[in-house]
Image (tube, rainbow, N blue to C red; front, top):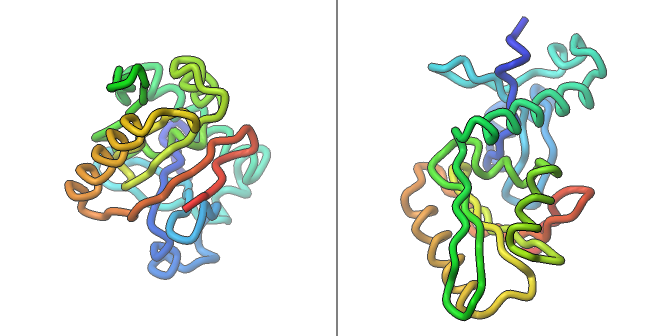
Length: 181
């Protein structure tokens, strides 16, 4: 059995399912290139959580995702994932998580999303996800300068990543991220 305090959500390229075996892991598709998986972080290695293990958790798959989200929230609260809010040209703002393997998984955490939306004063929040280690949030009605700054951040993060996802734009909604392009 695994340590429940070490279960986290993480985003991965869709092709991981071919490597792991689509039915050998718990996953949620986020579009044509990205899936969310449940992982156990053993400090030196990571491994995907398999369905038979999830069934042993109270509440099954829903319970496991709840535990993973709580653990992700704990990492943010402990400031192991640092959110940067950037004041950008034209009076716009964007929020960035960067350089942590859980950064992109923040798109799955509803409580955090609400807080980011408030910080950016955004009625509708968008997210650009270039790789597992980086994510940028911005308002859907932001200025061209904000979009350009977010695209620049995304391109740099993608180039620096060992396993980039490509360009993945999402509308962030209460029911979860909605892939746009």
